[in-house]
Image 1 (spheres, one colour):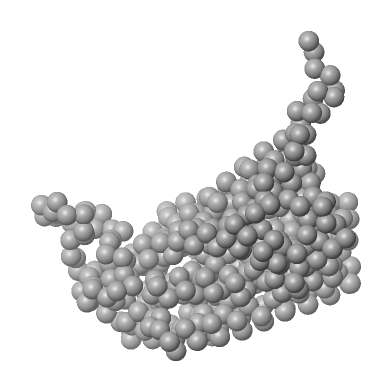
Image 2 (cartoon, rainbow, N blue to C red; image 1 turned 30 degrees about the vertical axis):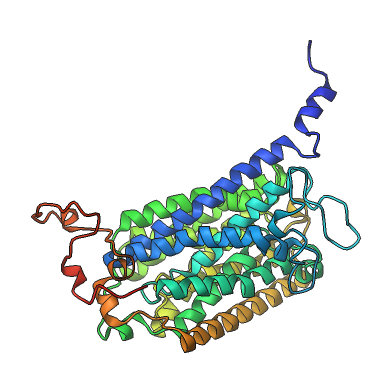
Length: 458
């Protein structure tokens, strides 16, 4: 018997009130965003020196474990529970209580009992938002690469998400969040992810000694493995379609705009960054192409679901010029932002948040760019930047008073991979050197890269 229209509607919209098409897209977007953290690990791993690769990769991976656990216990509730102005009520969804296969119950005043997001199960919404919480602190690792011990890093990340990420996530995206209520827009994390992480990264750069000062000699900052950088860029770019496209929270028209705008901005920024580098430095580089693409992705993030494709071209072009100038200026001032986190993510997110206030069109995401919206966007971006910087600076300096945060010079010269984690990313075989008979032990054989103490604890 042929299915009736009513039968088809019942299939599309399940008994729990969820839409199968929207749910499928957010499930896939969740996986895409989760894929970005390993991509970030490869991107950063290729940019650091060869004996510090594993130390930065494990920092990214451990964020997946720590933040996910915190998110399940009370982090989700702090972000999306009933508003207490600074945080959501930690008891509303503790251990994912009341989060199920039905749409998430709203905790917004005047909307109690309604669905917070129509059409998708609360568990799917929770999982998707958790991916953002995971990757945000991981972004900062590129700024203080090779300069922080593993144990203090874990402490810093745990404190940082509670003091910076959760309050800003709740303020912008949570029920009755004060910035969202005021009218501030952030489609996929320009403020919540990139400005918080980027300006916190800048604070750590200023609070910690530079690599040159730490080692007492000039440091060769040439990326050790450019194919890793290219691979990481590919994984990030692939995942960003879920990062931005999924932020429409449904398979709808706004998701279509977000997806195409993501591709346009990244592609244009890649080309413009390449041309700038070609003109100023004489040769285009693959690393520059990759960094340019990431700048375009970060900058379009807050505006992806609010602007039309022509505006994505403007944002991509602007991001390459602006972020390149920020990276160059910080380097000229002598600050050691190892992997350009502030210039690309912090200032890219800041620029995109402000441009949203000018370029938004009502028929895309329900917002129209004007002086009023621009003023709100600029104020929110400035406040977020200052808050994130001050809290992260105070946090890292406070930790330095009570624990040994910075590895000693011998640990760094040995390579943090071996001195903190007891393993090497590369061995003599990788360089084509003659090899000795391999030991049956899983531990790495000592090489010239381990000429320091090699025994420091993380």
